[in-house]
Image (cartoon, rainbow, N blue to C red):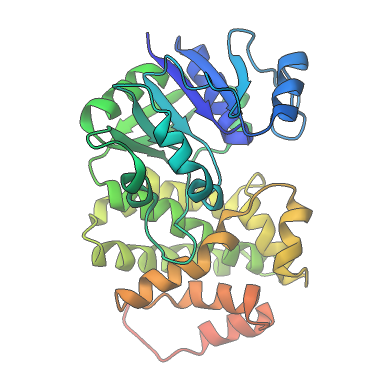
Length: 331
């Protein structure tokens, strides 16, 4: 039986803890604040993140300020927003139990640099620490309700198999994937394309426009991956196409919802308040473009998302800019 400590009690952190516990793992959920821990300890409910779904009694709840929060973990699971990883990584790395591996659930890039988060963790983790990421079309609301879903885990082979054994169950299937950078780039880039899909919804456009954004978005994601040495098959799999479809179309998608709000004139710095949770696409788009520029890769959809979110360009004008680009072959 694996001992998991899940760091971060947002929607996905709570749901992952619940899923792992139901699969038979011993689970501790380490909240970022004592206040959130007190709510979960007392009620087993967090209406913001879990709605009516209860956190199982067998999940131990603590908080990061607890000196023993990570004690006994064989796998430390990071369910923090990308912008918080840099603040917490060194402290968490210093407290890793001997022999434990680290599994990242975060879908984003390091702000400013565009580095994938495995590189951020490599800077601070003890040498030889097993590392992996889990990604895919995993809306927490559906998984918490017991609906079927699938994901991929990529990174250290032994840790990946341990995660697969510890967490997979009748309603949650996990596949192995050895393309770490591809999986990470998929998880970051798909959120930006989902902002564009939401902008299309907010402007009142239909399925044709969204299908075009999804397919051309997948093309630019794949170009960025190829420049990093990632495999094209990863972008056609669960971490790429699967997560892209879910994030661009679902009523649960906070990134799609954020795009709608941008199209309706809500400023980017107010969108997260309206959504009520972190919107990774807004946090990621400029870092994604910085990475693309360094690799000499063109990301036209992502560029227009940034122009709408931070450049003051009306979303309808962003669409016209995309439609009026020079004729090209489909590649």
